Image 1: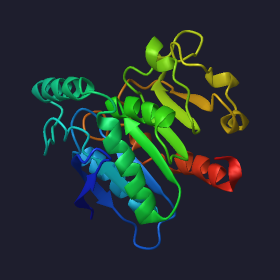
Image 2: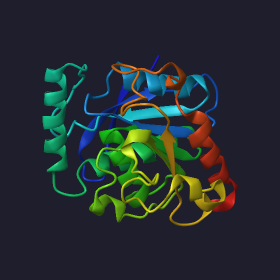
Image 3: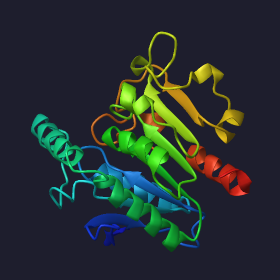
Image 4: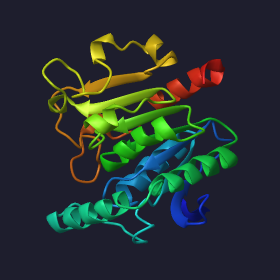
Length: 242
């Protein structure tokens, strides 16, 4: 069972974060980034899943700069409320919420004493991509259907750590590219993650967007956190390739 803690960003702003710790010494750490629904039961379950597998997990409340204590469901009204909060956060002056994510990375590293990966869903997937490209202290990043990742401005970013991006098959273009991202799944082998652009796309065959959400659109084969994927990359970085 996890707990809420407070973390403080470099600019002095504080936000809450859900902390899930393993029974023994952490094998590493992962920062879990929410969708537009807050740190709700789905995000807490993802964090708890990592802790059960031996990793410290920390899920910062990325709405806290505009509204604290947000926990939404999946009704139309919830989606509208969450989208409005997302727009408010996106309108903040830079670095905005990225400062809170950096604080979460630093806190996860301090508490675990190990490498830190990051995973996020939808809006959190976009923030995961931005974090991989602009923040410090990450060994690997796994965005899930990052909303907006494939716009020209976002696709122009270059990651500073290995990235494994998941999209529903229908979100990729007819050639298998991520609509502007600098990588094609068939040509992105694991070895390429050791050098720029360090990006691999993994299409989820026959699945719709939001396939990783256990709250509204669960899929039986995708309920467990992708620890095998993200921590295989962290282990590679720990071996001297970070």
